[in-house]
Amino acid sequence: MDPEPVPATKARAVFALGLVGLLTAVFLGGVIPATIALLLARQSHREAYAADGYLTGSVWLRRGRKLAWAALVLALTSLVVAVIAGLLHLATVPGGQDFAPGTD
Image 1 (tube, rainbow, N blue to C red):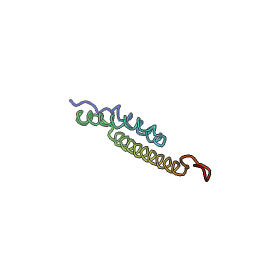
Image 2 (image 1 turned 90 degrees about the vertical axis):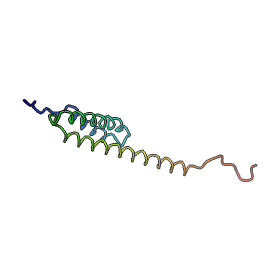
Image 3 (image 1 turned 135 degrees about the horizontal axis):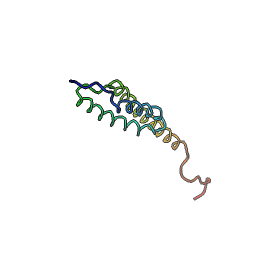
Image 4 (image 1 turned 120 degrees about the horizontal axis):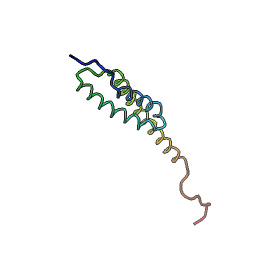
C-alpha cells in the first residue's frame, strides 16, 4: 500500500525566504535569506527525489528558487551601482593640498 502524498515543509520555507530575499535585496540584506533559500531548495529537491513523488510542493520550490536567484542578481546589481557611484563621487573631490600660487 502506497503512502499518501504530503506537502514538503521546506518548500514553503524556500518560497518565503526567496520572497524576503527579493524584497530586501536592494539593501544587500537579501543575500542571506536568498542563500539560505537556495540551500534549502537543494535539500528539499533531494528529499523529494528520494520520496519517489510522495512529497508535493515542487511548484513552491521552483518559485522560491527563482525568487532567490533574482534577489542575488538584484543585490549584486545594487552593489555594483553603489561602487560606481562611490567612485564617481571620489573622482569629483579634489585631492591633495591646495597651495596658494607662488608657494614652495
